[in-house]
Image (cartoon, rainbow, N blue to C red; front, side, top):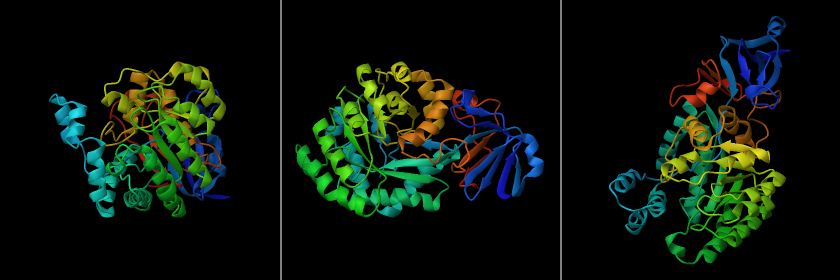
Length: 402
């Protein structure tokens, strides 16, 4: 058999669970065919294998492409001025009263056309891709009306037609209350479920549905209504939960077999068995924790004890986590939340894929997508240990060097 590409003379951090650090394999040759990993072989097999392209990895480390499983990277404008105001002593409340905060982003996103939204989102996506991110999840949620929510999702999907990344889209209509529904959250949830979600589903614009279930967001009853509506359209759910309070959103999400529960700083340890039973992934977002000067940390040790998979993501957004670096988020997860480097790297590959319901990527294994990154490092831990210290020497997307 002739393969498309043979990558040889590499050290492989497969991220598989094989009782070896980082899922390291003894093999050192990876064969790619028709966009997938066709085989993994010992070094001496190279003499009997044939391929159109041969790549000497020069003893570098080969890892799966990274997956940023929680971002809000499509939005209009930015909030750098609010960052300055906060550092000059202006409170969040006063900024909001002046029309800032999410209201400002909603207003700017609604005004933006698809071309301008694409231009700014592509800039952020390229920054992630520079670090070896090959799949990016992108949420809506800054339109909060029918037209803008659909526009955001169209822009997100179009990114993969112009950039070397794959995109997974999430409908987050239940992100905040728009001005048209001020003080009438129930009516807005009806609008999300009865008007926007049907259009999103009809146009195949979302791979999942998310809700901000929180004291300043939506109640568990309102969240459940969105979950039920998502089920009607065959869309899996996920949720922003327990970021600021213990609202029991994670328990509700587990009841609906959510792909993931995200933030979870205030998750009660007694609720973790629900996540373990449902298979939901706990997505840690240290960027928001850092940026908002939070002090309540997610219950990492309890999640470990219950074998709940932990993913790590940037939460890239204009307000609480303007961080366009998954490697930085991994470092933060280690420094701030006490993950090990191996947990952080698996959280940005294997478990990030699971958080998106994507079983075809996130590890180096025959049959998986050939989304791979090659790194000139001595140990995988270096990627998490160093801030802004590394870029991949090669990135492969679907077996193609990009």
